[in-house]
Length: 193
Image (tube, rainbow, N blue to C red):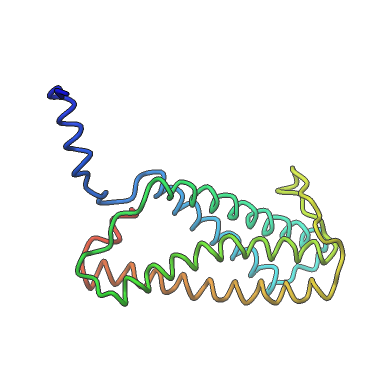
């Protein structure tokens, strides 16, 4: 079979396809949307936990916003993972020590696990407290467990532990990005900008 010049060029370019030097625009959008959602959920969660509004209706509105953002994080994370399957990330620097590669991959895996499980734990806890969720006051979501105070207390405790461990993962992630940018100067941070 004789290949045309165009076919040969396409074949060669596919065979030696270089990994991307930076994340694609959709991957970057997923990342920064996730950042905005997590910071929003954290801000509202801290407000609820530490400012404790006296107005009960306002407090319930804050809970609804926090929980609705959590459901949105869950959905965005599912979409992000689906996208990532067919759009792998750019490679890490070739000279990065194995231990750091392992740490980076473990932290990213933990992020995905937390971003999928933490909203579920919070959602079920809310249901167990006896409050069904209507996503941003628009879409009623199922009430899978019904009122169950002992379960609600346990899940709320787990949700708080997960929140604080997520803060630790974020600090580690941001510190690593800054280390790559200002100490190693290897361009890793620019891949997501």
